[in-house]
Length: 165
Image 1 (cartoon, rainbow, N blue to C red):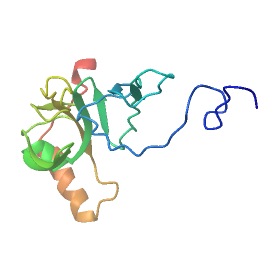
Image 2 (tube, rainbow, N blue to C red):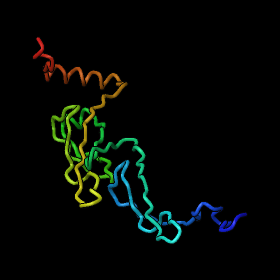
Image 3 (cartoon, helix red, strand yellow):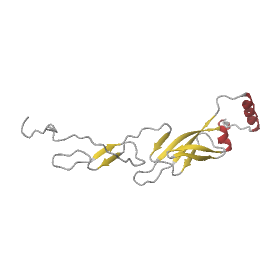
Image 4 (cartoon, one colour):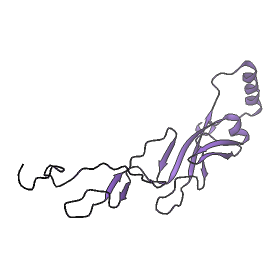
């Protein structure tokens, strides 16, 4: 051990210390965002500690997609809800809410829910939630249901492919 050797930093000039911090992550922080914690970083001998910079990683959600502050969701609905209109329970980032599906809604149609998106961490202003309608047809039908659909088809003769021919 030479002169000036410090056993706690092993001559590096830096001391490692563990400290538990409770950090409030602001709502709406995006993936790859940075959060600066003043005075909690490394310090050089004779200097104040620097800042700790956290690199934020946001895990993907199983059914919400984020674009800027807007949230997108694919929502399955029944053919009956789409044809007749309905009020359907819809997940949002704040919990469940009711969405009015207008009569005649088509698969792939996008309904907008104002102010139901993610908040901007700097302004607090919220984006919107866009609900992409996915009409789901039952995979198995009983005989009575088949007959009712056949009757429906006869009563409502409509060819959505007519413009192609």
